Image (cartoon, rainbow, N blue to C red; front, top):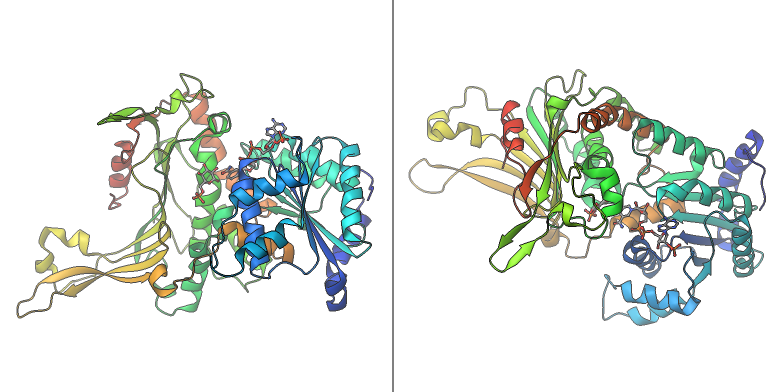
Length: 513
Ligand code: NDP
Ligand code: BG6
């Protein structure tokens, strides 16, 4: 399909109309879906995208007629692509059940086309191959851009002009990073929108596809007991924490240009915070939820330097094992100031959250792998058991924890009496541990998000105004950190991070560590 540049308005409208008309039942049965993984030779494609597509196929979630094409510059035969996919496939469902048979069926639907990302001619050739597989049926096309951001717009231009669907819908999933700051993000959006309308762009943030993050809204809005407490009246502080026990693992070139604030905070953690703090949406509709997220992001105060602690891991030796420093990576400059750790305090200037600190913490090369939200509640006023807690009264406040990784769980710390004749108090957990309650494996975040993109569900994807609001919160700080060449505090690989985070937590009366 060839289209003019820039995309004329009427074309955008036809496209939108096509989206709704193509969903009629008979057309759906006859239609076919082509998924093109652009950057198919890369790590993300191998580790996440192909295995997730297989899981969806295994669960019969993909349409009856579908074809998957890998596209990248590397030369590969269909067979070589299949071998590559096969090595990365795990059968999370049931290893004893027809898994091999399903894998073979899946692999037979996978093909490869080698081409440059900026060559319209190469995309025309892809289009020809896609048409052969689509066999004249109404076809919908989903492109997944799993490539570095510098070539997003080129690939979108070629895909849109030469390989988009003629009668069905064309959607494009875009991987992060969506720019480095407000300005570059706006430029990227403008570049993408030359060829696509907003409804066709699916900006992915895989944390939004995590089971626990999905459950955050269910917890908040379908239980009577949480929502009345969800405000400054009862919540003392909130912590949104991401910690990894590995370093940058060969991604030095990318990471040194971005750092932990852009890699984790501006997207994954801020999205969690927005879902946590937003007002009740009008409905579960994508636009209603995203409207509320934008509102809360716009009510937040942009970060100030004094609200932030930055760190970088240094090498260390434990017994006979030595761990590398961040700057030991061959693709990182020796005097790099890029933070691998950051802690930041946000405040939301609205009636619900006025004065409540939201402490966001993200780090690599730390002692553990975890992603969680911790909600610390206020003291019980006039607590009858004050004497029993003594100086530890602070430890006796309730805490709700939503743990996304590892071992999904929701638990509430409560105070209870130790059974026996005396009166001794203890702190226990009311614990919903997923693996005990739901023994079946939890789907990978990419599965849910790919399925949503296939089904046109935009709720878990980032809208462009959300992105603008998110960058507005971080851009001044990032600029200041870079202009002032702020030295990150060094912390040993495998430790709990820089000391500075304790001072930041203490400043805001946050119980930490
Ligand atoms: P890669 O760096 O492995 O890139 C994917 C493919 O793009 C490569 O196999 C290569 O294919 C092509 N490519 C790489 N560099 C260039 C270049 N400079 N110019 C043209 N083509 C290039 O990335 P990943 O697979 O790790 O990630 C893909 C995207 O997803 C990136 O945008 C990344 O930021 C994002 N992402 C990655 C995550 C991860 O864990 N890996 C997590 C979240 C997001 P070929 O040479 O065959 O054309
Ligand atoms: C990615 C970051 O977005 O998320 C990586 O670029 C990070 O640096 C990864 O390791 C973490 O994802 P997960 O799902 O392993 O927590």
